Image 1 (cartoon, rainbow, N blue to C red):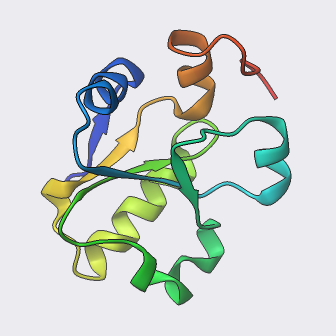
Image 2: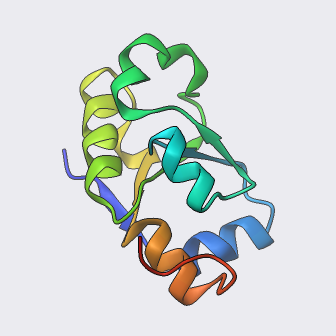
Length: 110
């Protein structure tokens, strides 16, 4: 059950096209104080098992973290819990890549 990566540019094009996607940021609250994507919902990775009802199964879900590791863990967890792996995406390079490629107002390292 492979989880696909999505590049920041691909995600931006989906958002610009008003694709029906859900972006879930799995970082810690203190990381959100450093940088935040205003279009994402926040579910800390370790809280995910208790908050599954907040993640839709009928939409493409893009998981985000700092650099892509924790969000990939979250995607695998959701797939193991019954989400369709074809609808799960990991933001390649995380919010740091988003900052480098899309939004230079965000820090590119922390």
